[in-house]
Image (cartoon, one colour):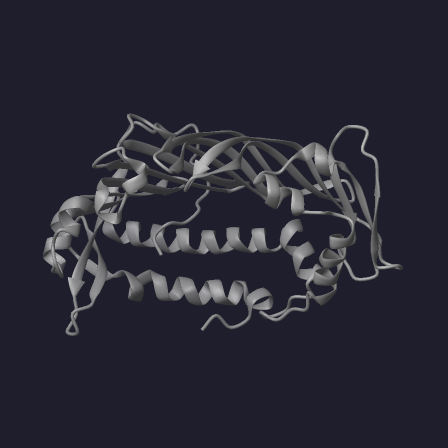
Length: 348
């Protein structure tokens, strides 16, 4: 794995000055990023949301028991009628507004009026426990758009929040989304949303630049860990209803973990036209760079093994190279499995 978290650089340093490093130092940095990312993942695993889910479903080493949760959800059928959604092909917040409260004694839900028009669910995080969880849908609006000849309500604004004893565990906020119809098909061409999964915040944005060009960003952040994924891609045409895999022209991507960044540029159209391309052909149409603090430290190139499989290598600035799996990925995955073992068990 190449993308890891690091401590923010000292703001007193001159970020404009080239930071010349040796290959040995670059390798040490990549190893440190690997260790820092494992620590970031541990922090998320030990966060309030995962801990609550682990307790709720009695999860240990990949095994769990959510039977009581399923029974609790199933018992909503007697108090919520979803036929209206199926009939109207859309969700209406006013239709379902109310406060739904679960009783661990009777194993049933009751509904009371909601003065603010919200949909609220109060329920326990443990079997036979008190109602310490609260799920609130405080905003929802949609628009009708065409899907294969049917008008279906698609969301354009949403605000959903989950709290435990008053503390936010998770949330989803859709600030805006733009849908465009093309023939009997609808496609979102712009989106602005935030997701919170304690302690992780995820920001999502995407937009159509010029009909055939698109740009999207996803940022994951928590204290000490900042991850950003960006992609730009261009289509051969803007008739979205007839899009196929072969209609992608070019794709640019970048993935950053604090001051480590990996960028790629793929000539998808030319590559897809080659039947059974060789490693050298793929390398000529695929450019992947690894940078630290804006300075390039390595390229990624593919080599073919004796069985014809593609093996990714890091090629450093002194032309030395090493296989990514042997140098970093295998150890990282072993460390990841160990870090998550109490939750997921053996990943093999």
